[in-house]
Length: 115
Image (cartoon, rainbow, N blue to C red; front, side):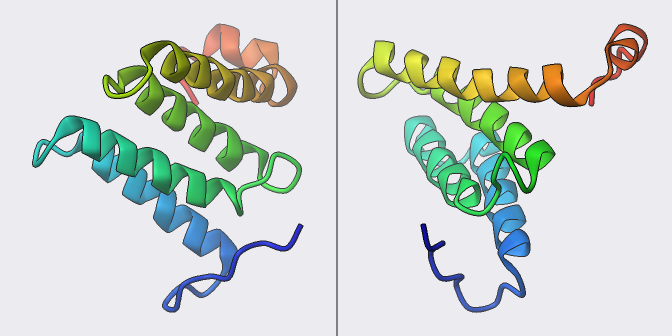
């Protein structure tokens, strides 16, 4: 699979992915405009980021972006609610897989500040 071309202005695929993930966070936190539209835009941004954040090459970024996209789907009140929740669960499974594989149990048990 050939990755999509980067928009001009981004120096690397990872930088572009980081920009898209940050844009998703901004849309999720925005109080301006329609909440459903902002969440849909956040999901689109996370989807763009995930074209470059891969589980095998950037597992932490992949998992964090999946987690944020899962939150956005869970909050999305437009469209098919059951389908949105199903997508949220799918996204969360990627996050949980990262936790199980990448984070030592001792760290999770003692570090309550999160990742």
